[in-house]
Amino acid sequence: MSIDKSYVLELSKQGFSYQEIATQSGVSRQRIHQIVKNYRNTGRKGRETKYRDMGICEICKKQTAILLHHKDLNNSNDDISNLQRLCSVCHLKQHTLKMVYEDMTEEDKASIIKDYAVYSKDAITVKKISEKYNITQATIYRIVKEYK
Image (cartoon, helix red, strand yellow):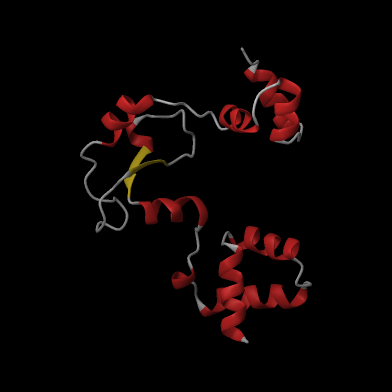
């Protein structure tokens, strides 16, 4: 079954959920996610070629690099200058934690505590705080627990 990718992307831009688009298109939610995120399956042979002898992580310079990170977060841009060899820990930090707990200053933590105290303890609020500081919700709870 052929899917009109431009139509899927347009629906996604309009705010439809992956599930809504999938139901309308007659495919799985996962397939819609793959289209929106420009997922390309290079197959086993492609992965083996890409990941062979990657060396040491370019950030921590300690662990063996097992992942290729796209610096501009565009998975279709495989230009060598856009790729970075990373270990799984550093790769996770690149995608989820621009500010890691151990690297936070006391001022950073105090700002988070202040925001947490000002707003209700609603999960949605914690999510907004995590987005504001680009940290995980678990990190916020860790900071709050530390200051109690």
